Length: 301
Image 1 (cartoon, rainbow, N blue to C red):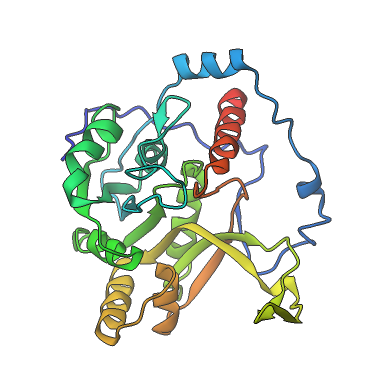
Image 2 (cartoon, rainbow, N blue to C red; image 1 turned 90 degrees about the vertical axis):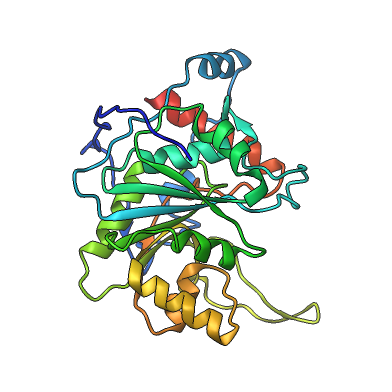
């Protein structure tokens, strides 16, 4: 377990001159031809820039409200098989910091998050805590939970560690290091601000042409306007998610994410449009994209 240091420096607030993330169910314009997609930034990074960033990199400013309402469950139990790295990818360093640390620091900087639960293989808890948490000045209390054989089991394990006084729970993939405190806060606020919403999922409109396939034969081309790519964080009312997990366990149902369990149980889940750079590091080539995104963000600050 990690005992955080007493640091209460507030995190920098959102710049009103810059656009916020917006809750949406339909894209305002075609995501392929829209101007926001075409305006790609310069991704060139010199070796000097990388070295300077690695030596001067500082953490986000952690903070905790007097009465926080949200607990975060960060899933770090994947084997990293597709990434091809023995022991998984969560401790792989991006710009001098473990992938898992980048994700956890974003939640540490959200005042409404009062507890961070990191789900990792039980036999490696000490290693993850030492390398990804204790080496950095977290303010929010951080505890570990044992990962299961599949994602759903890991999520349920983390959920079982959430105290009853937390009204909301945010579930996040530990391998999404580009998540921002602003996106997390906005997703929490989306659920809190809708009395009939059981949860909210971050995602973005599908931009590729989709094909329905059977036995390698294309049988249809659906309208991509109806499809979104789901990401994390996914924020839910805690008790709603508990019930959905218990129901799925009792009936032997396995979903691809937490939202699918709530949806199956009749819950109302909203869609929060987030940035496409909130990628999940899955294969080796994703590392370069993540480092480029982090570098651009750090240079902008």
